[in-house]
Length: 293
Image 1 (tube, rainbow, N blue to C red):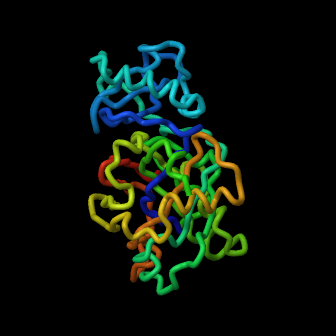
Image 2 (cartoon, rainbow, N blue to C red):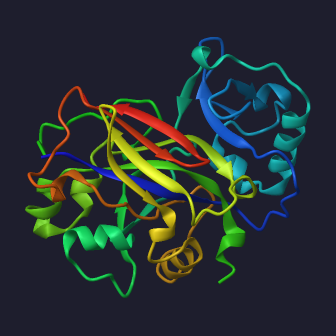
């Protein structure tokens, strides 16, 4: 059994405190294009718009988001200049969007972190964050296909946040709930089970990350609809909590919870199948679209 686990407001960490300056919000992307060799860093000209090639603007910039984030304010200031420079824009149809962050050191996920998601399962709101993980190999781009595996048919913490994006937490519920000792990890981390994107929206471009509409559509039908104000533990609390157990590095990703409406808790249950198209959307952050194959 395979079910869409829903959207998660996603937090990406940066190297150090960045003294953010007031400017147009930046939508950082990783992309490829036929005339370019390998992945490049870019900026969306606007939500749903074309791409400004940051590596063409400054060839000394790194070509991966993790290296970009590791250099902190030095690289971010270059991106600001590029955004203000009225540079040529590559048409969206001519580029392939990669996940904003690929091969992070870890993907830390938070379960049972929406009050209304707890209610739909008739379980108590947790007193401590419930932490699980996804392997980096599960990450695919914002418009890539989700592959149905043959194994399954069913503090000051905010100062370290670089920005937010959308994630689709795909789950193989048979592995999560019935196999592997009912531990979540294997059911969550099949390759392609964590689409991310379409952009890393810097935190100065998000009015309030804890008051954003969040929804999921399967084949055009809304199946999940909520607001990040339903999160039990806010971003700062999650970073502080996770930091007690592991070191967080630039580019690390935290999936902060899923709202109600997931298929396994519907009556009768509804599971994703080959050919389904899933759209995950968070207000101000964008939409990712993934087809099940």
